Image 1 (spheres, rainbow, N blue to C red):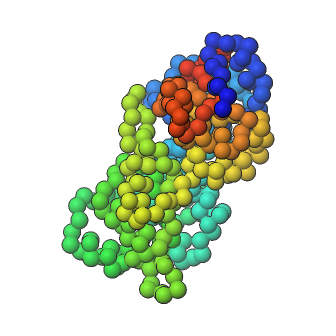
Image 2: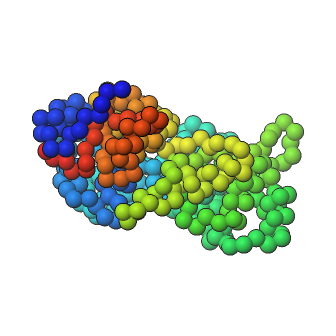
Image 3: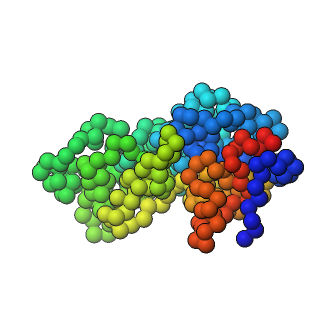
Amino acid sequence: MAEPQYLSGNSPAISAFLDKFDTFLIDCDGVLWSGDHVFDGIPETIKLLQNKGKRTVFVTNNSTKSRKEYYAKLSSKGIPCQVEDIFGSSYSAAIYISRILKLEPPRNKVFVLGEAGIEAELASEGIAYLGGTDPKYRKLGMEPEDFAGIADGSALDPDVGVVLAGLDFHINYYKLAHAHGYLCGNHASKDANKSGKAVFLATNMDSTLPMCHSFFPGAGSASVVALSNMTGDQPLALGKPSQAMMDAVEGKFHLDRSRTCMIGDRLNTDIQFGVQGHLGGTLAVLTGVNKKADWEKADAPAVPAYYVDGLADLRG
Ligand SMILES: [Mg+2]
């Protein structure tokens, strides 16, 4: 594996790097910002890339916001973009459910562990859902009849075909118990020819969420691993590094992969996504989760081709 090239402060190397690519897929959390704090020089850097004729696509695993909400956040921070240039794991999951799974009615509803961003993207694809932000599912504690209803399926919706797990800030035992009931097929008619189990999908497997210059539980830790542990099954994850997401991004933007670079802060999502997707390059930024020492380990999940201290260093 070639040594990653360090670009910060090296103007000729930055020029050569920029010349190699037409499209930059840019992760958001830990690259553009940490929570609500935008890193210095980020709007100017994105403008510079666009002024050079580069396409900037924002590819995020954060499932809590819809594309429209991301657009509002990017715009409010002075980062120029269009809704069409945003690709989130919620959108990726909605596309997968509507265009790949194509569930036959009536068993085509989605039980959601997640926030409004997931619901908005499911709605944008015309997918019926339950759970999510519905206050009914934000109940704390379990009554004896809750256990009984989930066990015999009477408290479950017979039309659920998918459980979609994402980052849910209101995760609780009640919701997890419903999701588990669907994944076990408690809600399905006892047809001997069908397992009746709902399909297990995850928006992403991120272990942590970078916020306020610190880290918090990510979707992978807060909801997905809990369900995996209960069922013994792994979900199909639709966020980075899943190549299902790369295929969806490529299909939407008609990328020339050899002229595309993935920019991100996390080796096991962003950089691995770019390497496995055979993109022309990957750029690690050191403003988020991973540091140089992480890709120098023998068991590093992926090694970037380039790195900078911060994205704004691309201004040269
Ligand atoms: Mg990130």
